[in-house]
Length: 186
Image 1 (cartoon, helix red, strand yellow):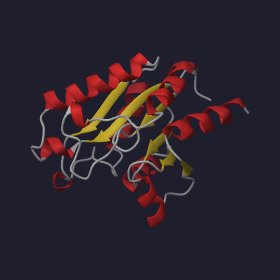
Image 2: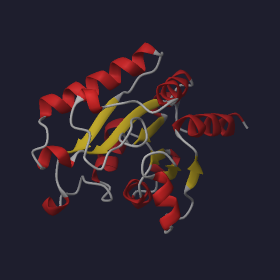
Image 3: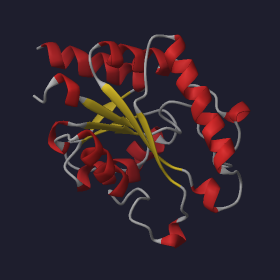
Image 4: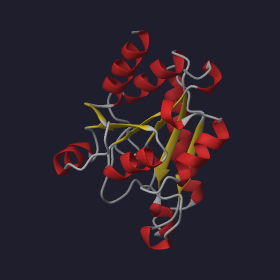
């Protein structure tokens, strides 16, 4: 088990923490938290885990919103998490579209590699929570433990199959936090 300072959980954003939309989340007003998500992050924070968010944000590359808008969405997220006693330590995002063929856009593991380097963590001891196959594929590519939540695109992801080996399924972020923390106590 890593030292307390190096315990981290990586979360996808859209569909895990907040409501997702096929039309993209383009403003702070459209950023709507999922039930129980803030409390789950607070519970994990209070248990000694650091939280990093890894999110594809191709809306920037598509010109649907700019960096100021993305920063405003993340400020809203940070404030809402803090209001219930939680903390998000870092937000990593990819602003590129799939056509850019960058290394940071999930399912490629570039963002997760950056998180592992910045926080000096062992990926094999790091849970990554997402709602899409690409979240799980990025996690598996660097050896993280993939966790699928059934919010956002999660139901469709589960139904489509082809999940990376060892993927653990949870109803939502709240269920992940409860399951994960109860396992840690065993």
